[in-house]
Image (tube, rainbow, N blue to C red; front, side, top):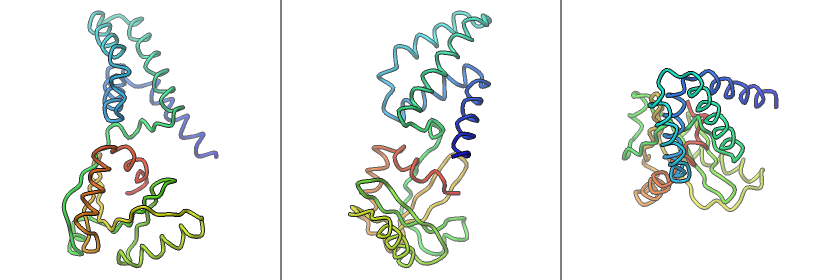
Length: 194
């Protein structure tokens, strides 16, 4: 609970002290990736025009920034994680155990009606899947619609997912379709991966 409050405070402070142009750009980027851009397009265009029309007017900048912060606050209250706006999800073919030397790690992903769950570790994918299934069963999270056996690597703002030898091509293609259609869904579920 205390960590969540600290995180919200940090996010609010980041918005308050960010440059108005950066805040506008980050917001546009997030809205585009969340497929919400059309709902805010006119307002975003107006803010951009206001800022370009009065580049040295502190009152205009302050007003636009205040309004941007309110929009971002509203989006957070709707459950959006705006920190994911700059994150990129990449689906990059298949890999085997040799990819460990390039910084990849094992990941097992389970998609249920209630969300996306995952487990990482040193064990092989099948063993990790057993551990994840045991945990999901204890938590009474069933049915599992899909399981994926993946390799992952973080590279700055990029999360690279690759299929493992245990993953079928059809399953990996299905996951890529889901991820390309709604990248924020997977990025949010996998936010803690390092």
